[in-house]
Image 1 (cartoon, rainbow, N blue to C red):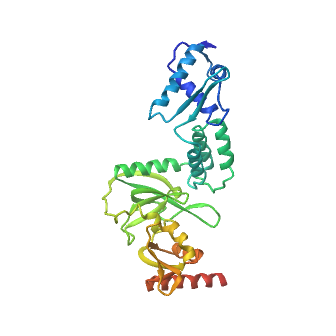
Image 2: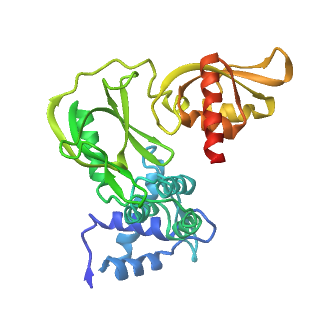
Image 3: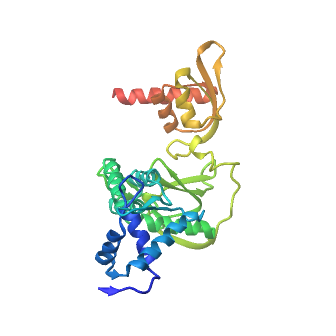
Length: 339
């Protein structure tokens, strides 16, 4: 055990101790004697009591700093002590971040555990145990690709440098194995311009001359062996607020034709439409019924959109060609299920 006259690290150690062992709950504090014992047991240092007291006072003084993000309370009296009342992240915020990591399909179980472990250090040990207990019951299928972080980093680098990439793309076969999707020798090339998170997966958005909307989407957890090329990307104009409105238009990030569609349903289902398209969507009563509403939305017309309509019990009022295509989809689905 060494006496510690150098105070350069003590302030940080004290912060870590209060962060880990105290929180805003009543009685969740440490006396100066308990703090001194933790310094000896955990950090193998033994500063004198005056040094500890002075550095604890310095921590309390941080309360007056607007940018510190923490608040330390000194409890006076013989049985008093110190506790952290607030920290840069509140418990609810840490839980939200943990749940988001837990619900992500794009990373492996090991990576999930490591990330959650880092996030839990933002709360006290007791709070962390409670957060972990609540979140550990959430089940979410995980990726088997341990290189997903590397691939995300490479794609983001390519986007920032405006570079084209080459990669291999995979899909699941009937044997539950990831197999390469065509172009086995040369791989794919793409001009990425954005990374989008949707329903637990990351998607790479790229410019493409192959599709009518000039945009192609790839799921990042199915991308492997990313290589950044020297080719500069020729940027292409996107519709105004394209990425901002992508979540409203698309269904499962699948591509299709963007169309303005009028949906019709019972007015009790207005919440379903608002949840999907936002509060700005125009909704009005139908001319022939006070119990039904129409809503005009812009969507990416696809089989996934039709599946959402069927599950939500919502119909298409117009245009007629989209309505006819939806009816065709329903008939084909019925025939497939009757086989």
